[in-house]
Amino acid sequence: MDVTGTLKVKGETVKVSEKFTKREFVITDNSSSQYPQHISFQLAQDKCGLLDPFQLGSEIKVHFNLRGREWTSPQGELKHFNSLEAWRLESVNAGSNNTSATTPSSAGSISEPMSETFTATSKDDDLPF
Image (cartoon, rainbow, N blue to C red; front, side, top):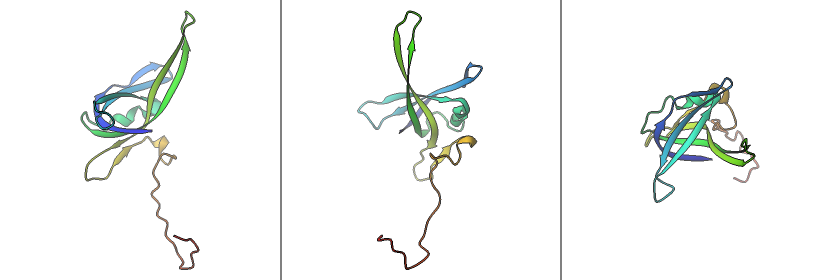
């Protein structure tokens, strides 16, 4: 999934535990509703640095996954939580090429756009288009 909006809040990277770091940010989406929607996202682990090149007020496109989990409190009460986990951020600039922020570990992954162009090499091509 993805959504485009204006970067409103840019949090710092927080070390939650020895093995887990996260970074939260908020964008304002003015296009999908009559009223502005302030949407909170989370970056985790090696993705925390994706937010570094963006300034407050930047128009960005956020690619994210919806995550859900359940937790049982010490009193035995079952709770459910949702989070929007961002995995790619793109700058949205009118009249210029989009730039994206990815980590080296995600380069070449299935989420990356293909940049190859295929052309026919023979007039005997049997494809109908």
